[in-house]
Image (cartoon, rainbow, N blue to C red; front, side, top):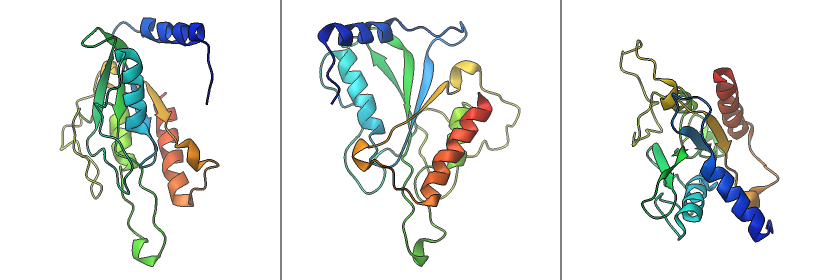
Length: 189
């Protein structure tokens, strides 16, 4: 566990509170949390929220489970104090990347969020509270002309990994999803 002095913790918290995006058309930077089922994405948000709220919060559904507890795409504000001013970033939570199960009966099954859904989130197409469907990725339903403004797109991707699972021992299929997401994010800048 990281042992920081009170002054260092205060200074770090203060710098996060004072953060402002450099582009005026983006009032709040959108930070997408991506990781395995049970990797701690929702718990990470709850921890950040608790630090700035000044008390333990559990706005995002979190806990151990074999399948993702997060079934909807959610954008969460982080506020200073209870009901205080929102910080200049949103934490965006996704359904987990379910591990590829071994065995011939699972050969063509891969649960969890689709990388196509992540691509749509990165580009700003998927709305808050969208219900993920592990069998079918989100579709724009015909309207290809709408391009979301910069403020609705993802500005940063954070890969959240359960430290107790390190070193990462992922199958090629599991690693492939992480690499695909990283490459999609890099292509979008």
